[in-house]
Length: 189
Image 1 (cartoon, rainbow, N blue to C red):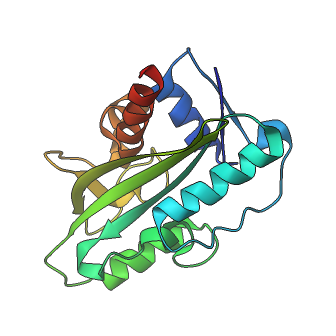
Image 2: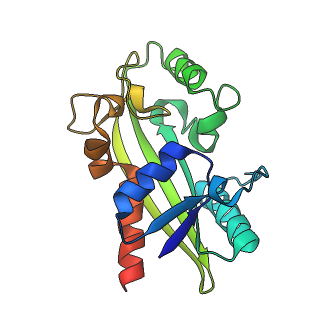
């Protein structure tokens, strides 16, 4: 079964393919040569995931999975939240990380969570799947793997950041994995 993921992010496409396994063919906007910018003007992760999935389904007719993910920091009143990818500018995660760490300077409460909301749009309608992983922010980045805020996030009961875990280790516990597990249960039902 083919699932069109509403992204140009090769890391995200590969991560989803790894988690879903060989029973699915995961494609992306790049595979369909669709380069229009999808305007994410929703006010929640759910709204943005729907915008992306709906756009892709309308363009291709393929079952489409939109996802909106982000880092939610308790001490920052939920920021960066839906603005995670562009928190300090346009998709520059070095700057995004620096901004979060600067805002967290001197803060004792370092609890945060990653959330993924996935929205499937296909001929049967719209369905949502959400996953979260809780943890704490580090004082400085550590690790070279992963992407986004991975270098500053240590999952609960962990000792290293997401960026220090192998892809398999991260994918076993990630927010995206949890959302995709719900997606797989839905498909089997």
